[in-house]
Image 1 (cartoon, rainbow, N blue to C red):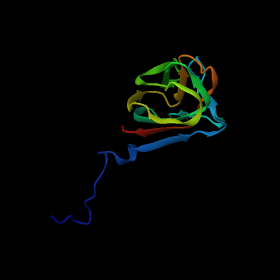
Image 2: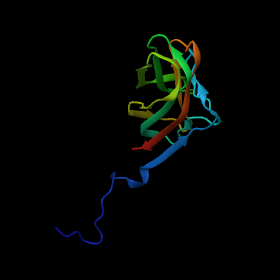
Image 3: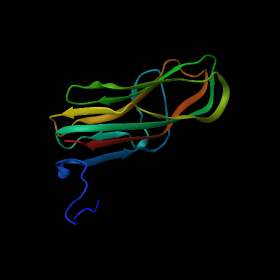
Image 4: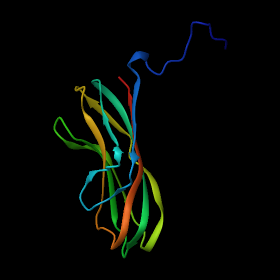
Amino acid sequence: MKLSPNTSFKLSPKPSANSTLTVYAAGTAYALTTTAALLDFGTTDPSLTITQPGTYLLLGRVVLDYNAATFSASRVVTLKFRRTNNTAADLTNGTTTVDTDIITTITSTFGAFSLPPVIYTTSNENDIIQLFGDVAVAPSAGSLDAVAAEILAVRLT
């Protein structure tokens, strides 16, 4: 089938509605604590402001490293999307959990973890979406560090 020159593929009936917002963390690695908190990289945190009302697809990823860490038992690590203004709350279905290994003074990459894709709808033009994380029990030596993180928001409508 041959397409005419005026025919084009579109992602949406309203192509101008599609836009993308991104943030990539930069700076010092963040050592997870036992309290859920923003992954604070010092220079650029994984914090994104939604600038238009609409429906968005949110994607997120966090890379965690063991830093001379010792875990005498497997511990649960929680990573999540959280809106921190306009009625702060964790985003529904925006949490993932992983279990650490049992290790003794290991320095290596624990893994790159994707958060579940979230369809997020807002009537605001200033919602702040951040990546939070915690570990249920801190390592008895060393730390568990977030060394990279990013959020991608694709406006669908």
